[in-house]
Image (tube, rainbow, N blue to C red; front, side):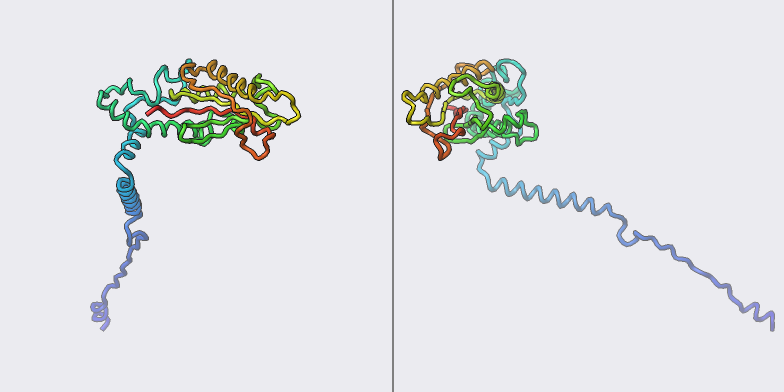
Length: 269
């Protein structure tokens, strides 16, 4: 009986199942690929939307701005002319693969190129580009705006920081520093320049008010400063004094009205 029991006894087999934690989804590499695909699709649909929302002329202007066929230089070479006689909108010097047809096409989009140049200069003067070369104390005296006439850069006095010695056309060190910076930035282009002087009103009790000649003398001083800093005299289109006739504050006697307006004039069409 014992032998029979031993013969009928079967061996016990224990199975151990190995469990792999990532066995359900095979890792996360697919997530990276899917994210790249979604990003590419989003970029594609944005491109399609932009192509549909812009005109052919606008698209060409955008393309020329990011891949210009005409030399564009934002860095001064240190000479009298930052671009050595060439401007952002030059039509006479083409890229190595340029030809006469490209010059004609560039003239058609001159307005777009000029607008891009004005925007670049505004960015520099406002210090919004992250690489401003303008000190904070100078920024406080600058306001820019684009009008039908062109890009207006306004320089104005502040309490304790005048542009001129009181009652004279003699520049302060502040204005000298502003002039150097303005000339450098204006030389990125070759547009003509207009300079206008404005002053605050004087009390009526003054027997012989000097606001008219003073405003013109201050504009002339600014002209001499920017010319000395590298702006060609041939670019100066107009120098004028408007006395107190165009105040920027309700108080005509306010210090803020002592200012200079320099305009990068639009190119003649």
